[in-house]
Image 1: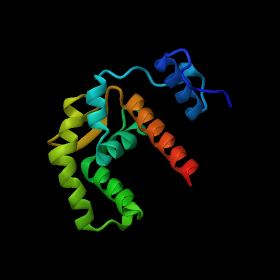
Image 2: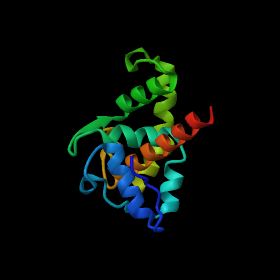
Image 3: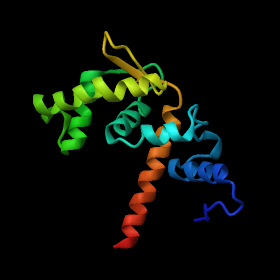
Image 4: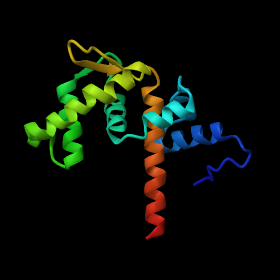
Length: 150
């Protein structure tokens, strides 16, 4: 495998190559630029539930929507390491409340998601694929580092 380190100091090119390697695609297929400042992105992805929302929405089709209830059930399943259909009402409610009161407003305000507060529908918006790819890249890098330390 080729060295993906940015020997020329061009981190953007190195990240694009790394995205392409992770996705098994041509560099032209890698996610586009993120519409937010790096500090905002770092703040948004600093929370596990926001990362889960971004990753979940990144697998939706462009016009596809999910509901707050469904999103809460799936994230609770991930957090408790159980199938979503086995999530209890209390487990789902805890995630639902935090998504509704804290995480979805931040993601909606920064145009990462489109959230219909009345109807509860949530869909993907700007930069969701690029930010999900960043999350995956970070998680893989950290997993790789943890594996080499053992």
